[in-house]
Length: 67
Image 1 (cartoon, rainbow, N blue to C red):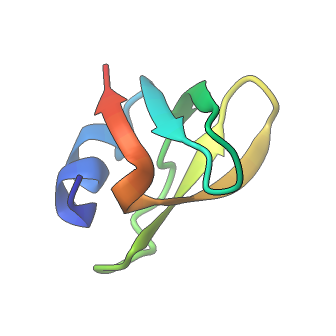
Image 2 (cartoon, rainbow, N blue to C red):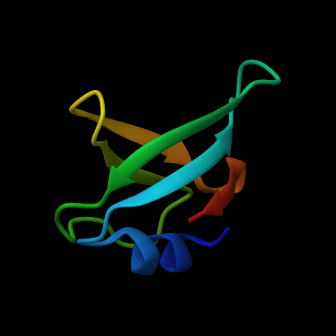
């Protein structure tokens, strides 16, 4: 997925994000949001994991879906 598409779906919205691990064949699913518009175009997106209460950077190319 492209950075701007991801950002528009997650900015100030809570969604389910599905992505592949860069280090294994695992697929991860997290509930997340982008709280503030602090990033411009990038290969990674910074999201807030709502379940664990932590920030995560995720490679845009690994994102399979946003529901």
